[in-house]
Length: 606
Image 1 (cartoon, rainbow, N blue to C red):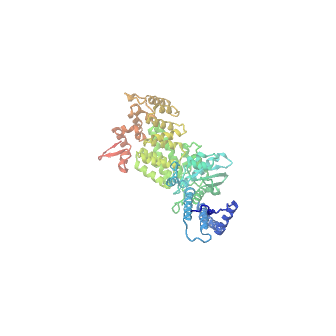
Image 2: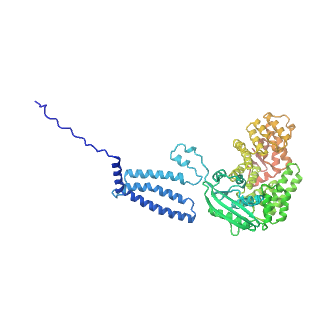
Image 3: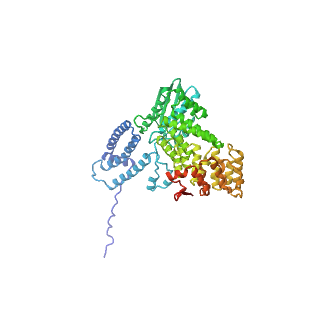
């Protein structure tokens, strides 16, 4: 029989873990920190990092290594978590191998450090979007990306601190001369004078100005002219943060004004660590005037606030016959008056003035073979004479001397356009846009070349954003609207024009409002001024566009309009192209975008 009254063995007791207070936890943590000598490791690393950073700073200042100090500081800061991690596992020298947790922590720190390095130390202007996309971060593809940063500078209008407010032309002239000198430095992109002068008299944040101009550096300064002496102050500033990198004062006699310009441009290039690229004996400013009064007159004639005439430039070159820029300016004056005579139908006077223009341009080239303006003016003459190959060569000579000259790029691109090189012309306009981002007149011409390349919507966007109210903007915008079939908008836009024959404007508006109805009697349509002849194709009279071309006797871009495509296939236009020398030029230098040879003596255009 089983004895059910035997005693039950006692149940085993569960060990009770005493509950630790916060102070006890902190005490244990502190003991672990002391055992692993983490404080000693941290202090030693900070001391070593401080010494290294000080050495890096001294070295970078001595060798002008921009940005090295900031990079080294970030790297040393990222090293501290690594040192703490290593100390935790190896500070007491109890563990001689890298454990799994240790390797994981160090790997995570390296990944975080790498991302921070890319974000904060990437080159200026470089987009981080591709890096973030590779890392799988959502929304990276929506981040706007800027073009890779190019070293660039804009010379803002120097302040006139002279007691005479009328000396404004002198400070403006100094600004333009320094701009021109810097533009000759290879590897340095110099923002054009016109866009930089948009900020004249405006006390805006330099960082905002830098963003508007798309430049990495800015130059500002002041000019004080008193008697025979001049004092010029110039400063080089980083556009992204407004930091002053270099500043200098120049006190000189006015007879040394060209030497001052050379000194300032040279000092700025050195501060940017950009080589001048000059041959032995060459200077950035070649053409000089020894007489300060004559130079004053040159700056005043070229001033934006002075309406220089042909007679004033003729008087100037008589006073300074050895100054190449004066002769180039005179050639430009002849060019303007010749164009006015041509528009009035006075072709005899236009030819006479063009002969004078060529003589003045050749004189400029003869006096100074390193002055781009002489070649540019001579190239314009040769293109008018139908000597297109010579014009191309002269433009290339000018661009080899001064590749950043905005006015030169403007006229060269228009010549390419007239020659039928539509794509190449647009590429030059893109270069010009980078140099002159704010010049409205340049944007208008760019828009016209864009819609000749089929980029109609983009050209409309440019023109609609243009606040200008002149005839050119409204004519180009009206033409773009018409190309999209927006005839009512085109007509309304033309009505805003006030500086073209009003009767011709109203006739063009009436024709647009009737479009796209075709006329049965194109010869009875009203005669329009040349600027408005784009209207004719939309009422079934495209051949009426040729009247101004044949009367003037030289090529204008009308033939490269999309609406002129049927005309380009006809013998009448082909005869005109031969007359102005384009066909011979194409056979020698290459055919344009829309034309190609057919057999030995013929060609066809699309």
